[in-house]
Each structure stands twice: as C-alpha cells, then as structure tokens.
Amino acid sequence: MSNSFGKLFTLTTFGESHGPAIGGVIDGCPAGIDLDLEAVQSQLDRRKPGQSKITTQRKEPDQVEFLSGIFEGKTTGTSIGFQIQNTNQKSKDYSHNVDVYRPSHADYTYDQKYGVRDHRGGGRSSARETANWIVGGAVAKEIIKGIKITAFTSSVGEIFIDKPYQELDFSQIEQNMVRCADPVTAEKMIEHIGEIKKQGDTVGGTITCVIQNVPIGLGEPIFDKLHAAMGHAMLSINAVKGFEYGSGFCGARMKGSDHNDLFNQDGSTQTNLSGGIQGGISNGMDIYFRVAFKPVATLIQKQDTIDAKGNKVEMQGRGRHDPCVVPRAVPIVEALSAMVMADFYLLSKAKSGL
Figure 1 (cartoon, one colour):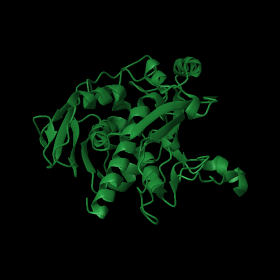
Figure 2 (tube, helix red, strand yellow):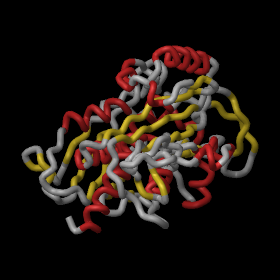
Figure 3 (tube, one colour):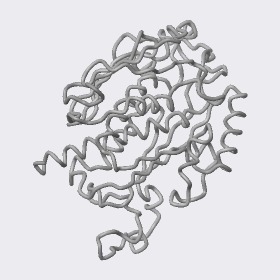
Figure 4 (spheres, helix red, strand yellow):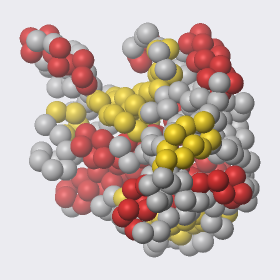
C-alpha cells in the first residue's frame, strides 16, 4: 500500500479506524520553523467528529501528541513523528458486516485484493485516516506563511452558492456548522442535511478552495504540473468523485475568444479562467478549484447486497455516521492543499539553489 504523500515535504501515515491509534511521520520540514502547536490542534478540532448535530456523533478528542522533530517550539529538521489516540471506538456497531460487503464501500475490493480486511469501520480505508493529513497540512502551513488557503462548502445536494468567491465574506465560514461562506445559503444547507438525516439517508456536495498570494513559478511543465498534483491530492480524499480548477468543465462550453485570460502590463491577467495555473505553473493569480463529494455510502436504511460467499443478503447500516461529509472535509481540503503547496515551494527553492 502507498502510505506516503509528497516528494520533498512528505507525510507517511499509519493506523486504522478502530485500532489503538493513528499517526504519521513528516519528513522534509526545514529546521527552525516556529510550530504553533495550538494552531495544529485547532485544525484538528475543525475536522473531529461529534462537533455538531449534522455530523457523526462519535466522540474523539483528536489530541495530537508529537514524538520527535520539535524542540522548544521549533522544528529540528529531523523526522516529525506524531500520533493521535483512538478513544471512542464502538467495534460492535460493525459486527453485522463481518462477512457482508457494504454497497459502495471498500469492503469488496479490499477483500479481493488482500484476502483479509478489517470490517470495523473500514479499517485503513476509513476517513479516520484524514486526521493524520490535518497534522501534515498544519505543519505545511507554517512553511508557506504568506500563502492563504481558504476552503468552504459551496453546495449540498441541489443547494448552491450563487455568487463568485470574490463576493463572499470568508469570515463567515466558521460561523455556521456547514462551513458555508454565505449565511443565507448555509441555513438552507443545514435544514436540508437535517431532513436527509431523519430519512436515514445521506447527501453529497462540493467544496471550493481558494489559494491566494501564490508566488509565480511553482510547478513543472510536464508530469509535475501544479494542478495535476492538486488533483491527485484531492482525489485521494475519501468520497471524492471529481476535481476541477479554474473554469473547469464550464470552460468546455466556451469559445477561446471568451476564455483566454488577457494580460495586464505587469503580467497579471484581466480575468482568471486559468485558475492561477498556466502550462502547469503558477502565474501569481489566485488558484481556485472545486472538489465533488459523493453521498456517504453508509445508510441507516435497508439495502440489498452480497456476502463473502456470493449470497444475496439484506443489510442496514448501524453506528455513527455523517449524513453529509462535506462540512468536516473543508479542513481536509485545506490541509492537502497546504502540503502540495509546501512541497512545490521547497522543490522550487531546491532548484533555484536557495
């Protein structure tokens, strides 16, 4: 299994949803970086379960413990080891699917690939793993201070923000439980998720991410394009079904004369349908992209499926699950964005000899 992410700034993780702990090792972080441990923990608090009525009610403190690589609040340049204890597992909630494959989960593919699987919450395939990514992203943000990364819920089901991000007040994102940058739309989203939850069903949505103050020149022309790395990161998130940057799929409906970003004399562009990246390289404009999340696969409804012997059976999800994963995924999108940007920033410095 591939458990490492990044080239210079790397994160290697371990752990399962119902094991004793999860954690990781961060390599490539320069020495002398001031690491605000409270800021790291605050990012974990944004992702942790049980934070509102529209998220899973699993109660995990998600308290990170750093084991190495930090001395007197500064990074030492050596590997940063950390762990997060699992404290509120309820493995009995999964006793009904020991030999049953849950629809649209990784149960079947894991069993076919490895011949063994951890049925307790999906084991390694659980989104519990993403808490490790939050730690990696929080450290990465300290390397790229000055680059601002902001993600927010831009749609839930058929409810969309109908304004461009430039017209939104990002200070509103953390003021509502759905993490939407538009308060009016947020109330509609929250109500809709509540209705879906009562039905024992789930709903998907999208997250928009905006990266500002990006230096020109990050990324490579061919296989290490900046947007390709960002797409790889976003498509690594559990439940993600799509990624588009800049004009995205809407750009496919346009004429070139309307789509081209015309230059200003200082090299900036009058429009930014390129999404801040041209030829795989950042051009100094805002990078913005959208990530699509499917509805959570676990339903508190009866569904037909099969067991390990191929018999048709009926099953119903149990336990504590998110009716919509999007609000808790906002800090995950930011964390992976930060790791990509830190990696490309360090690669750029290495190539320039700085």
